[in-house]
Length: 196
Image (cartoon, rainbow, N blue to C red; front, side, top):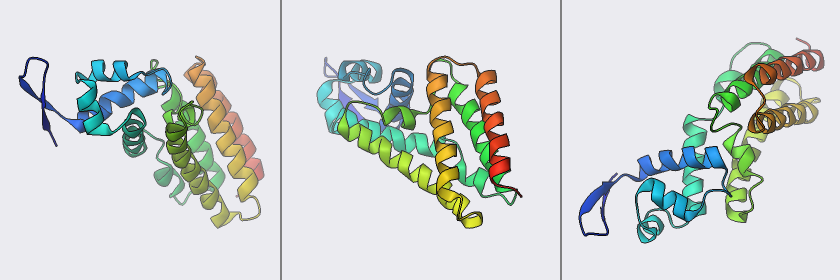
């Protein structure tokens, strides 16, 4: 979908909201929600504030769309990894290794955008990120409960806490090698907690 936006001199130009969401995703992931201002967004997107508000409603409204896009294109593929028939401990270990890789793959946008968003100052944006975070936690817990109902809560907490730690460590500059080593060590603990 494209719309015509009238520039300062009255010349129409094409504005693609989907492309703007992709651009904003990079900005939010790189800087974090709180550090991105409306001026940053409008300058990066090449639009004026009235056009921004017409297209997205608010900064938090744009962020919600960014989170939708991130979940569809940039997040760890939990369904794919946990939907295999391999031993659950092995699949959960793969989730953690993939998390290490996802969180460190772009040196300018480290960590998990959802996890980092759960700590932002804007309540609306924090709630939006929290919704995605809770959904991922529930998905992991339910996948565990299908095979190990007694251990589901404790193991899901361990996996989600490890993922949060990997995200924070990536954000603070820890190398992929160190993140992956942590994920593999956690995988050993999972193999003990969930014997095949």
